[in-house]
Amino acid sequence: MAKTIVYSTEACPWCHVAKDFLKENNVEFEAKDVAEDDAARAELMQKTGQLGVPALDIDGAIIVGFDKEAITKALNL
Image 1 (tube, one colour):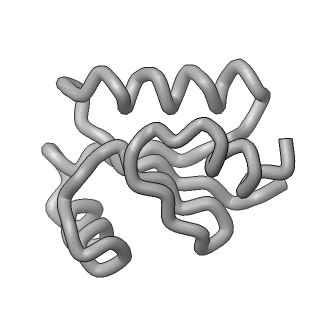
Image 2: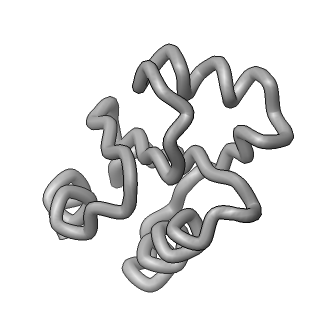
């Protein structure tokens, strides 16, 4: 299974949608709250050049925003 990291904030509704989508598809993921975790925020900036959330890192493929089609393709669902 693909290594998946979700960069998010608790206040972001699309972050919850993205995480719920992964759970519904039985995808294990690591959630990193960029509002609370300085290291996660720096990691997100390094990977994407921005602070937009949700941002998903699926085996190195970076998807910013809840792009269901791109997420599905990256996970081979």
